[in-house]
Image (tube, rainbow, N blue to C red; front, side, top):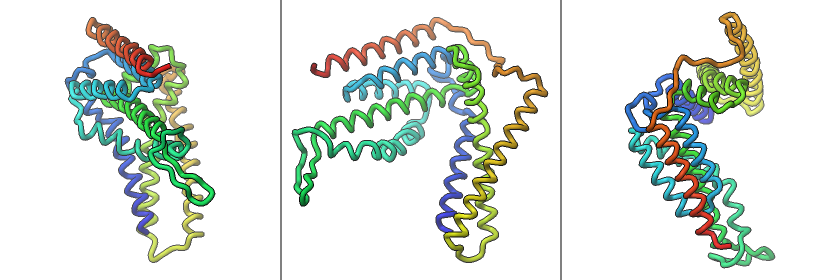
Length: 279
């Protein structure tokens, strides 16, 4: 039952995190620098910097952008330990799956090279540098996305997507997914807890797999039923196919200054990358 207990604890923590992110929005309600900007300006700023980070192959440039990002997080009163842990605890695991094989496919000079039977095992210095650049690029991009979500109420973020002419269907699906996924996590957590309270002794692998398959079928059926019920309720309340918000946006001078500064930063990062990389 140790695996079931671990799964139950993990699902419960994920559900709690999503619920807090959706309903409390404690960091988005603080009086910070990013919280005071227009959501449309913030979205444009973050998109410009993310694009520049994706085009950058220079590790010093990526580090400099990340330092500025940390300064923006501090000015927005985002707790450093919460912000850094939320980003960097998962990146080494997921990025490592992609990066580790590439370490053995680089060109000379080699950090070490050993002959193991008929196979030569070598790790090159350019491959290590490329792996560091990749991890830094992923880390900065994820940090930008996390900071945007932490400092912007979800409804305002969705409305800013509409201002960028994002298709209404995409906005609607994103809104429904973000708000209702934790309900299914709570359902799964309740199923695990119910099973644990009714099982006495060890169960065989076949029985456990059968329970997992039946649980997946139940959750899928529950999701279809809930989607139909929610859509019927929306239609009964006058839903016309577009997500609406009562918040009125107005771009002020500081919003234009912040957006212009982000664009300058993005152009400077891309330019510095091309100057740093020899042709």
